Image (cartoon, rainbow, N blue to C red; front, top):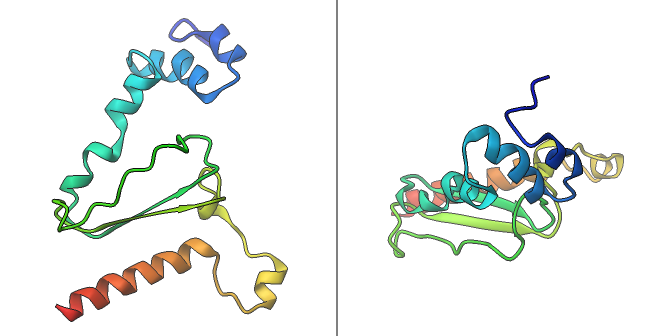
Length: 134
């Protein structure tokens, strides 16, 4: 494979996600470095323009996100076009919510779905109840 487009040695010696992003992502996609990549691709700059209710879920142990950075909630009263609810769980990793399979113990407790479908259902129900109340 052609490795001239990125820093192959940097990729192979990377011990952090930031080092890999600097050696590969930034080089391949034309960013100055991983910070420039984050600044240009972050959704934070678009949140005030979101026009529908939104639920953002992040796990505290997600290795792709800075644990110290968590944007404050936006709301109609705070200047956004629609309410945005942000949830952070202690565990879940990166996309762990999406691929969780119910354990035998969870199935025996009559749990019908893993956490993410239940949380999304609860959020959608809340949005509809809020709209009906107006």
